[in-house]
Amino acid sequence: MHDAAFDAVGIDARYVLMEVDEQEAMRVVAEARGPGWLGLGVTAPYKRLVSALCDELEDASLVMGAVNNVVRTDDGRLVGINTDALGFRAGAELALGGTLQGAEVVVAGAGGAARAVVYAALLAGAARVTVANRTLETAAQLVAELADVRPTRPTAVALDSPALAAALRSADLAVNATTVGMVDPGMTLDVDALPGTATVFDCVYVPAETPLLAAARARGLRAANGSEMLIAQAAAAFERWTGVGGMAGVMREAVTPLLADPGARA
Ligand code: NAP
Image (cartoon, rainbow, N blue to C red):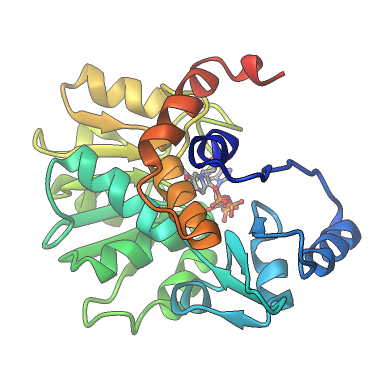
């Protein structure tokens, strides 16, 4: 989708995929200071490692402790940014058909995606944010680190706890930000506990329809996967690298067939 955007605006550049170990990741980051580079996209498990290698971190990435993109300045400095939070907000508000302001949000997960979801929900003025994770200590750490973003403090609970069930009963938005549904089978949230007005959002985008989304739709709830989050975060990064905004449509058109049939990438 990045290449489609480069082509659409006539920029002679390519988004190159690299599978790297930690040493190679550090070498690539050093190389990206060179004049041929606009920046980098970063994915798991290097979002924290790369943040430590940048010369400067913008607020969102500082608070989240992770970068998902790096912008190279004209003088070869690397600025770490995080566009996952604004990507989530765009995707979630599209799914909700409204704003996150005043919403009661339940998030499953406490990794990088969950950090972005919680940060975005707090910044958008959510009325309540409950973070449920398999490993309760990780959720507690996330909540402690993001406690001062807004006066509304997020709460950490364990998956399958009575506290999670209680939060789901009045939730406006239930979000899966774990790898369940993509890596492990099953689902993290009980859609039967949600009110009929709730929206379910899954950060996972492959497969397009996770068991969680299927269960939500079977109950007649609004439901969306992470594809719009993916497109919005990518379009925001593209704008930072090139100065050209408004590319989400081109990127969506390019990526939609690949998400529908991941094998088509080969
Ligand atoms: P991560 O940092 O590795 O975190 C993984 C999370 O999943 C942890 O909270 C972990 O819980 C939980 N988990 C893993 N296996 C589980 C299981 N069997 N049961 C319950 N919980 C389990 O991963 P991430 O980077 O946050 O990514 C999470 C998902 O979001 C991925 O599927 C990724 O593709 C997606 N994502 C989407 C976008 C987008 O643009 N749409 C952006 C970023 C990420 P523990 O702490 O207990 O291990």
